[in-house]
Length: 279
Image (cartoon, rainbow, N blue to C red; front, side, top):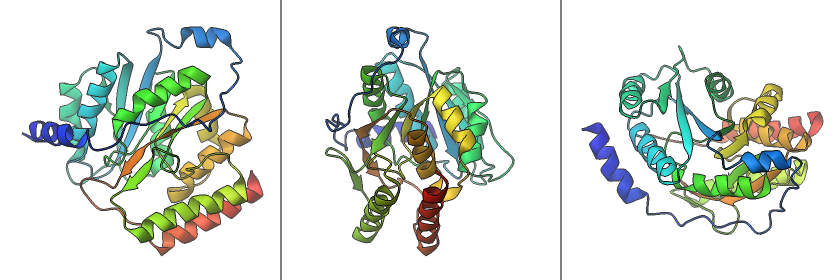
């Protein structure tokens, strides 16, 4: 019943957001390896989605169904690695059902407790078999329909990273009140002024990485919590990685609660200045 209801909901939701359009302001990266370009469209290219979860019992079936549909319709080889941190709401039980329904594409690699986002990616990477890795939120804030455009842009420019952005033409944020929108936009402008990362959405967590790049960047990243994604991008740019942006529509979580309070804002400001000193 859960999967049936989720399918019905996702069919309605999947048409809400506008299709992404290419950000013409993003410069095309120079290809340093023509052999790599030649193999981008071969069946050997596989996309591993790492999905950290905590209390996402109701969202997970919707996201998984949409991932399956998106990759299948676009003839892309894929896998989904669910990393659950001991959710008390039954997320792991739902994930186990999904591994049977979508085998062999979906696998569950749980952990004993809530150990943090960064270590969840590291844990998931250990089981990933793709040459590209996609990270995204499990709360349905990121719609899988943007993935084909991210793949297309990566192939066009042979980029190391393609990141979704809420702050380019064609992107947007839905479900937030004015205060949260202003805080998020201001945080990104503040970080851009101090760190000059060259991307418009530093705190976004919907990204496609070349696997070798993600492994290198994540090994150097020290931040936790709200500043983790920001440090990943700043370090990637410092290493000379090529980055493109794809506008996305960000929708506040379908089920559950999200919050951005004073503690997170203070943490973010400290993180920006810490990166300014270190990177």
